Image 1 (cartoon, helix red, strand yellow):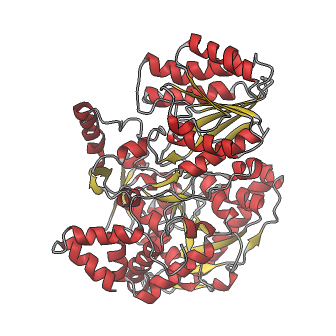
Image 2 (spheres, chains in turn blue, yellow):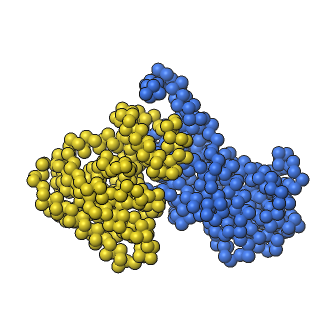
Image 3 (cartoon, chains in turn cyan, red):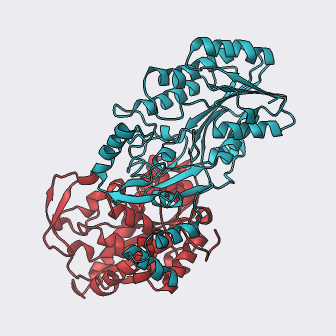
Length: 340
Length: 288
């Protein structure tokens, strides 16, 4: 792993990965591809080169692969470029699906490239009362007529990469990662938590696994270093109910009748152009799903280590509900509970 | 998060647990879960299925009245339940609404020594029931998906399974104490993970709530809506007996053999039937 190309390297997770790569003395070159102009925070090392490319355009991907990738003798590609918000339409499809497919196909024609790591999402898996809570690599995927394009794109891109496993001379790893609570990481849960009031279906409180940007970038690094081919689910350290995630973010948790959640969030999306899309998260506010990291631990040596940096600590969560209105029934109950 | 430290729990669960369960009980469940579950320490006090010590404490209280006063459960054979390792308690299912499952759960919660949290395996639609699915999950109930059960056996848990499934609980009154054909999944998994199967026979539940009709309403994924003859279950006495454990060596090849699975399933079914027959013969009356 001496020369690495990282697409989506200007996101929070991408920057964390690049820092880890640069900390490794064996890494000779790191090419970071972003859709934005160069960022100064990533340009402090002589081994780092920033490239601007639009992966939604075939010409741009071709120029990238047969230009800098071939010239620099890149050996490993970590592909994690994605739209930072839920965007649908031809351009989103071109970036997520066609961009991924082209990048891999062109890379197969560059002799120096030996490793391709694709960062996929845990959201490609279906969630339902009848499905297991522990999600391993063989869990059913979310494909159906009611699945929104964003998810279908993610599934298609994932499967397009998987389809080349064993057929390509490049060794390929697909990492289906838990929700990363960081801006620009493609997490719908993050978008959901940006609102001060979080509506939740009454009578449900699913268990959700979340991963820190630190753990996610480490998993990508381990996959890039490894030669192991296959699909790996990548869990995070924190598994907790949705209501506790809302509380840890200092948001107001408002349970409402289940059928009202989607229409209200759709209305909100239309009214204020919010990033959270209720159809993308269909089923995820009702039913738990925790990724199983057994294969990643065994093959890649990945174990989650770093907890998410919660905006509120546990003691603050408790104090906050008391302080908000000490005279309210909730405040009185909190005081009573804390005395017990 | 070390045991005894602040555990991240929603207010209403903490409130309910503190109202209904004494501190000693809550601490006991907290210790029970902490010892049983490796993941407990890093998952904010919950396991991956959503079980929580305060949820178990609430279940302990809620089932207490039914267990002690309403159904006055008489149970025997607890010594047959292994103290460690993966165990499947396989019981007969009956009574229109699953009070039988609640009473066996309560009995295992109270009478296992050292205490073990029983993980009742419910039909998959239960997780889709608002409030009920959530409360059950907090108490340790899991959906009947195969991977869920496999994971719990790998974690050496004590499982409560009803191999008859929905046909058992929904059978007509005239068919009482006639076991429906057992499904073989529990035997297959016992062979795969080297688990012991403890047969359990429950007498009394068949008469608690005779079913007079089934409405073809598929609410929240339930197969039908039962119409019981009585609005509340009758206060019949429950008689519960655990039999000798049937031990299966870890043998993944046997788990793929349908003939051996069928043989094992018939063995479990006849052991449960024997326990039922014995208790029916000894029973002096519905309410005694």
